[in-house]
Image (cartoon, rainbow, N blue to C red; front, side, top):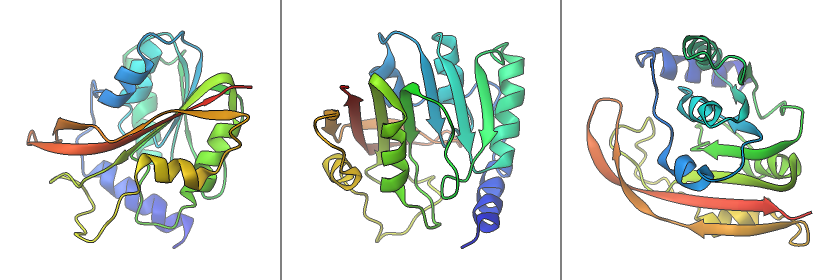
Length: 208
């Protein structure tokens, strides 16, 4: 599938959803990052922008990227509306072809799933290499399918956090796994429905 196909698909996903005025951050982000000293963060697949906005409010300088120009444009407007445009830079990137420049203290990849070909392990490996010493890579994947998910394939299998870490194949002398588990929670969908879901949570820290 081409870059144009992927961009068109995700533009459609975001266009079909009402533009958020104050999107919620992902709960796994807030529990993992609260208490960390703010620095520079990279949000891979920023979507509606709840994570980027929350990070900015905590004092982080955020680079937020998405393949969807609709998502990027909405987040740019959202940052201005919340007076966070000095802390959020939203850019369009197709991670199959390009990766943001810079070094970061935190890289987040929440639910970076797509129906299009993506070398996820390669993307996450690139993310780990963009961490400063002491920085963390937070990867949160679906461990189950919510009723409101765009992907209702009953045969889909979500790799566990340890499997994702193994696929990234980082040098243990430079990076260490701080967390790799599969907690459950009650989640709320965009239409107000709730359901119990499983997350696969992986945190990798660069130690030197």
